[in-house]
Length: 411
Image 1 (cartoon, rainbow, N blue to C red):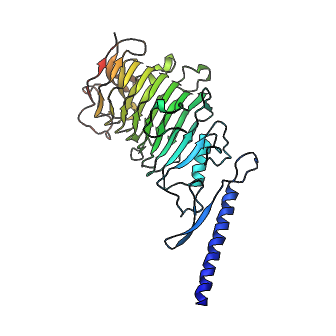
Image 2: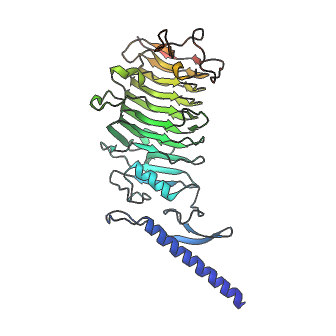
Image 3: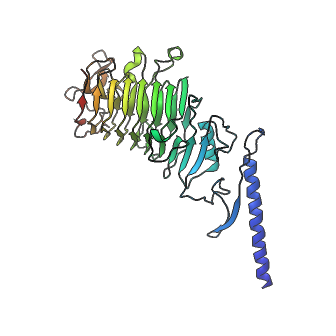
């Protein structure tokens, strides 16, 4: 009996020692020379047993104390952003918010909330945008969502139910606002709800996987209710180092949902006007859904599809006004680079009202770049009787495009 009591007492001492060690380790991770910021979260840990492992389990408001421990995985892991925040804060409560997306990504790497969805809740402040926020994002999860949204947003709500869209202003930055760099051949599960993105030259959101190896894709992301404004090089010619490509630009990215967004004044200057698009799907970007969006004043075609990007659906009352040089929808491939035709896409039931210059334009066009008689690249309208499907690796399907029910209102 005495022997069992001593074993039990030793076990209790071991748990208490582990708890103290965990607490010190967490405090050490949050120490900072800046005494005006939140350096140590208020952490309360309870000892518990998971299987045969002794573990310290934290409450909902703190980081996990050990990788084997889990919080309530039915609830999302939440980080807060505010213009008044600091990246030295924990980000775990509204009164200790982070300041930048870089800070958010760093905290996710530290906290490792790998067993639950993540919400990044961003405070809307009228007439005060977030600046210096352009980021190359690498932190993703194949099984859980990472969502960026206004702090007061609830799923299923509309724009009239929130204070407003938090705005991210690039101030002419020669970059995208949010470039996702991952080629894991897996779901990336990023969600964007009701944010505003403006004044980035290259474009807004870029889901970028491997353009040279189509097996290395990303996808299953959502962009919903967002506002893209003043993207492209037209507004910052004095900082010209490149041109705009797309408010939403997908490279080998599949099964994304793009709904209820506004694309306004996405424009390049005269020389590169046709290169800027509302949504640009390239390099085997397949099975994407584009619905209920509003496109106005896009200097290039509202939707451009390139290089074996197949089975995409653009339908259900997208409103396209003052967009495009030649058409509202187009495909493009560069035979000099071995690019392939795109197949089985749909463009249906959209409202189309005049090209970028106010002119009547076609609903759709197909473009190819090939070598002319002088062995120089030349752009021409694609024609199956004149141009091959592509190099030997290109596959052939039934049709390039299915279209019906589109309204043409330009007069």
